[in-house]
Length: 234
Image: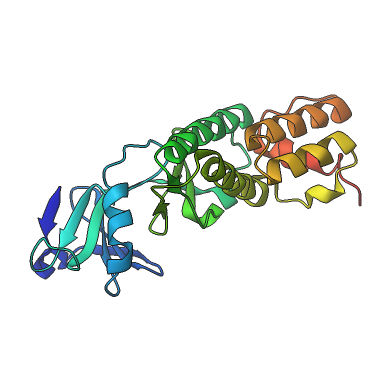
């Protein structure tokens, strides 16, 4: 859906963040309006494509805002879902690891769906990714994602899974994986890094290794974080 942007509509609306592309405002009806800092006409076709997608793990534009007319080059921003949660970098110690693992599996499936749509994801960071209070992963900063019409699916899929692997490695594992004592985990790390093994499989095998070494269950993120010290070289 396309809407005409009216600056008056921003009066009294709370600013909730500013990024490279623009400033986000929280509306009274619980949506987010992003207004671009400058003209982003070269990204307009990609943003239009993203606005047609329905993906539970990725927050895409729902309505496009134009000023003063709906015409190419006049895109000034968009409206999107407002997500409440904690940055993936800052998981609560009490976070249920099995629920987190399930959420990562859903993220991987949703990423595969984007790959099928020839969408190349970019700039995956824990700060751009929220873990919601109902145990879902939501990626909220998707402006730089690109639509590559003639791309090979396998190439897109491999690149996207590398992005997810980087996200899970830096935001959840938070360790230098090259220091694993286990050769098997080192090999899995390499396979995950190059998009050959899903990050959820890598994370599951880490949890299994912690169980084997500690003889205890890995129920919470605190258990996981503490157990990592047992399976790493100093």
